[in-house]
Length: 283
Image (cartoon, rainbow, N blue to C red):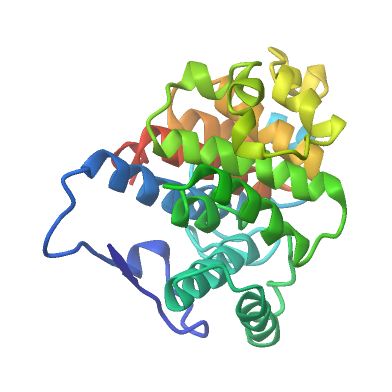
């Protein structure tokens, strides 16, 4: 599969990007649909939350998002994405052109995008752009997990960001490989995949999430927050995945937590898209 990327100055909708499937299709179509689902899921989640970014949960409780709409914080068209997807595309294009993980090339692309991407594109969240790394290296899980963490180091120096990306990278790899949802949200996932993480244990804050802190039936009432801190964002995205049984329901739950709506939903969309697959993301 290849994507036809448009000029950054062309304000197009996701549907305007052409997906070209290879002439000789892989026999493993399920894996292909999961990989595509993860990338498209990221963009869809981002676009869904874009119009209400920074709105508090109290506002969204009264006026919940039910579909993509225009306007809002950045004055975008319905379906346009933000910095979350833009940075993921920078990362994906680097991996494709370099055919490997090249930190310098990634930084050059981030810098170019930051300078030319317009006033609404100044984000640098490590989790929101993560998917291209575990998707590119999914055949080598330990490598995928390590490089997921390394991708965070380019913009986030602390261990929490490094380990949050390692853990979420592992979940995306497992989803692409076809692990069940029960396995992905299991409190034992980290223990069962210990060899993927090597000799460096996860940060305590990430271990707490891995052990199920996101399993809060009341969502926002039970402390789940769609905030910008990476631990809260990871917990919120996993709560949205755990608490629903379709891509659409989870994406709406992620957005309606309020605050950093587009990023929470973009993080959710990476794992949910990999699990449910491209064809189960609403058009």
